[in-house]
Structures are given as C-alpha cells and as structure tokens.
Image (cartoon, rainbow, N blue to C red):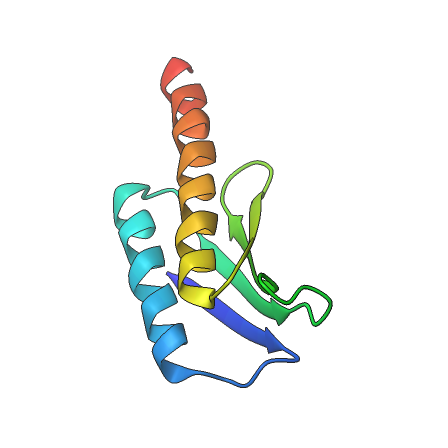
Length: 99
C-alpha cells in the first residue's frame, strides 16, 4: 500500500496523516486490488463554515477512482470522502465478479 499525502496551503499535521492512513488501510485490507492512494488536503478561504477539502484518488486496475468532500473539519471530510470511495469500490468489485 502506497499512500501519498499532500497539504496544499495547509500546515502539515502528523495526526491527520495517521488518521487518514488508518482509514485507508481498512479499504486496502478489504479490496486487495488497490495499488495506491493520493490524498490532497486543501482549505477554501472563501467558505467560512466549510472549506476543509479532502481529495482522494485511488489507483487500481482500470480507471482511477476519485472522490472529494468539503466539510467543517478535515477528519469529517476524510470520512465522507472514504465513504464515497467505498461506494464506488463496491460497484467496481461487482464488475470484477461478473467476468
């Protein structure tokens, strides 16, 4: 499992990185065909109540899977993004089962 985390205009946080890797590890354990993950943390200054953006792109056989979430803090944003990715992975796994 390769996880690359980038902070765009946001201070680097070791606890946030550890939290994200822990959540992604569960996905990698459940779906063994995953290759790597690119995670981007951004902050949108224009949105005061939201603005904590998490983008995750997963590499796997076939097209890559991408999800993004914009919430009031990064932990919630990570959870929402991984939830979206899991939904997409379930659909992708069904495609693999039929062939």
